[in-house]
Image 1 (cartoon, rainbow, N blue to C red):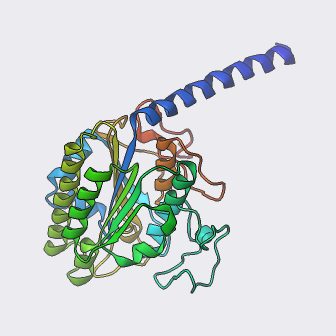
Image 2 (cartoon, rainbow, N blue to C red; image 1 turned 180 degrees about the horizontal axis):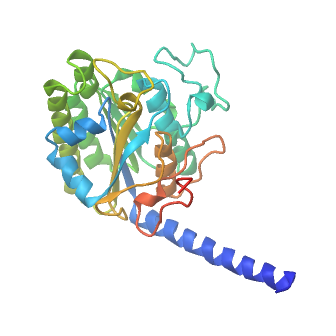
Length: 315
């Protein structure tokens, strides 16, 4: 085969591959019109497996899960929630601990928007689709300092997990956001007060499960269950009454995918990091991610997308 023929064959093959990949993405974009993220602070895979969690058990049966999502270090809330919405790690966005403030930090972001923050999925979506409804309700006040305020239509903090969930459901049903983010903090409180792996900790996970069920009911009442991707995640796990260290108990979380186009009862094999969350949201909504992001969409969670090649070596 001469060089000209070989080039033609390769070009044709690449065109077919790109066409198929674009078709898969277009299918997701057409199916998924809304994304809801429910972030449960401090919820470990152990908590989901051992607590009474009928709602999440149903989501696991209907959708896909990655049990060993790797967090960024250290395993604290600010840098991990930041990484999830910023599509990058502390080395890029500069949030290295819970003491970080927009006007008080040691490491500047590698790229910043006008307010000084690294680009988030909120600001990226707002720039790509200025008319898109975007909102967040959070139980931990610190979450509110991580994102660009002018990118959101709705931004509320509440002092309890119940009031946070109830308000988020009301907001979703009324405004039907393209992207809605709910943060719950009570599981982390139980971990610090009673210890991870204790009965009160598992009871707090069961409470989170019931609040997730409340959100799902709201999505159904809004008639959007067939158009909404639901992502359940955490920021870190824990060990004893704390977290922050570099151990599997602290640095591995679960991420659950449920909704249109998601593979049912599927355990994701590819490696996943917390900062892949923002990249996945951008992918399913059909918007380009910034060059500064290092996250990659978790495509293997969706039908028509095989696991990536070379996810393990030495086999």
